[in-house]
Image (cartoon, rainbow, N blue to C red; front, top):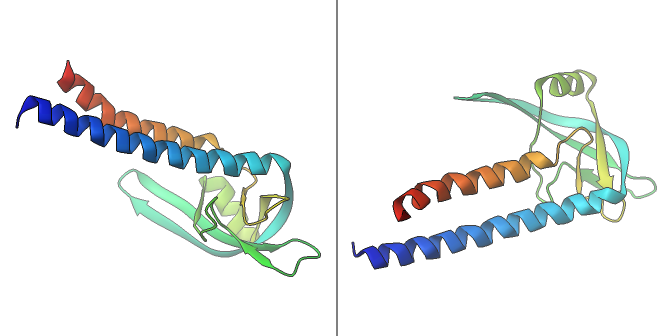
Length: 144
């Protein structure tokens, strides 16, 4: 492959990954900003699982809650409103599954934006940044 074409291809691919990273970070930021004006409630654990993979188990659950006087049932969801599995550390997961309840914080303006109360918002940002660096570092070595 022509070195110039390879460089252009990497630059385009890097730009696309940058745009994707920025989009995901923006969604994450807006969701956590909405949660800066949050309330906390007890939610009912509706499902739980342990997913085993090479780096060890991941403890996840789903939950549902209502906000008085609204009859709507809100569920574990991400900033895009998708019903998702929420990952927790082992001790929190075990306690929540045993009691069938979990403390949830939700945005007062939009309860569909919610997360477990003991979630660390920096985990997703660190994951995204780590993924971006994983993709960029090998290319930087090739360019030099």
